[in-house]
Image (cartoon, rainbow, N blue to C red):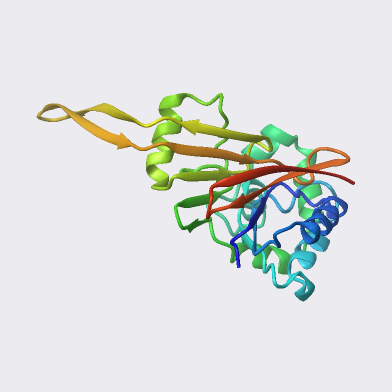
Amino acid sequence: MIAHWAILSGIEGNLRALEAVLRDLQRQRPPITTLYVLGDIIGLKGQNDAVVQRLQMPDLEPLEPQICIGWWEEQCFNLFGVGMSGEVPELIAQQGEAAVGQLWESISRSSVQWLRSLPFGFHELDCLLVHGSPVSASEVLTPATSPVVLCDRLIRADANQLFCGRSGELFDCWIRAEALTSEVKTLDGREEQTFDLSQRRLIGVGSVGRQPSMASYVLYQPGNNQLKQCFVRY
């Protein structure tokens, strides 16, 4: 069977948008063989527990969603005291103080524990699939990101294709092959390091639930490197 991946992110608790995308996936040809969900499955759209339960349902087989954590999941872990910090300054700064109570009331402890078991990302074939970047789930990468930063993240990824969902945007950005030279300051002076960066690719996978009435995701065939951007009205 031809490997045919569906890659999505940013459901943000929007069950209606998720159901629309799942229906669209069933219609794709060749059939989808793997479904990747790159974080932010919860958010402030009001149906976090329902989204978690939907992704756990057996009728999604044979897709068997491969799910990793995103920015919203990290905020949830901190809020419930199971993350790296017991505070949520990023959540307050980006969503306001009211978001703290909304998130707390919108998800059960059992859902939080299930989310806590999810990985940071996936390394498959020559692809890395994460929510933000290899550095952090909160980092936003787009074609407008500094080329130096993009090259650093791609080298860290040790992959030819880096899929990310933090921006919520759809994009397909190629980085041309070049040799990079960096200077490192040590106690003995300065040292130069050279990296050979083969042609690599940064791909934004869109957002399922962030934009009202319109979901977006990507399809990817690793066998021929073919990428398709998809839009679904709901």
